[in-house]
Length: 70
Image (cartoon, rainbow, N blue to C red):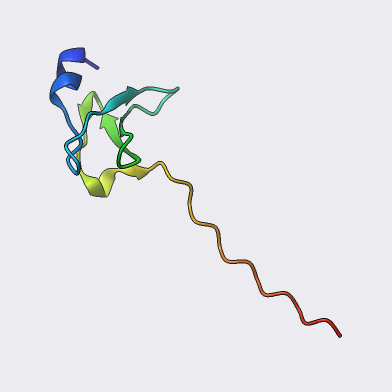
């Protein structure tokens, strides 16, 4: 990613700075404030909230109630 482009891009939600993250195959622009990762496809950032991936872990399902003791 061109560093000059990274200086111009901001998070579409909070207008905060973004960080370039490029692990193995997934290229993303990450907003640490909103905990969202925006994909970069074919070198083009997709700055749509609907395309962003949440960095927060998925909420776990509530535990099943314990069976009453006899």
